[in-house]
Image 1 (cartoon, rainbow, N blue to C red):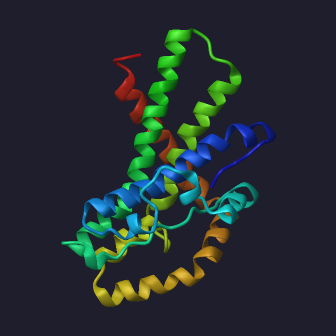
Image 2: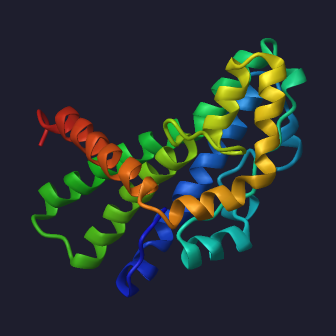
Length: 211
């Protein structure tokens, strides 16, 4: 999911933490807004990284290029429209990552235009905040490959008939092995690279009139 070199290791820490925290906080915030107080009761309605980061998942992110945060637990029975609202909660995380990436790019361009020159370290930190947030959004939706328990799988399960959704959910027991297999093949690169470029181009087009 993410490639590291020795220089990226330290510079990438802020981006990883921001991407994880924003992603999970967005799930919690939208769930509470739609009527489920479970995330609030479990202490997830906060931007404190300690509430969201899974130490093992963070280490795995560095070691094998993909990892995870603590999942936000929700109870769809508390929603007024459970299927619709579960989809909205699932999409909230990736959407928040894309918004964060966009505003990080805005901040980088503002700093560059006002200061004239940025050190390589500052530029790299901002660049990795943008890239990791984009990657989190793509990874959790994985177009055409929505693997349980990633966010895209929740969307698909709510769109499927109940019996098919139940069978599909049973794939979660194999999700770790599926993801490892995908990482060892060019499949993820074939998905990530074109989507990264597309999202960058959209951001650039949106910001072109201002910079």
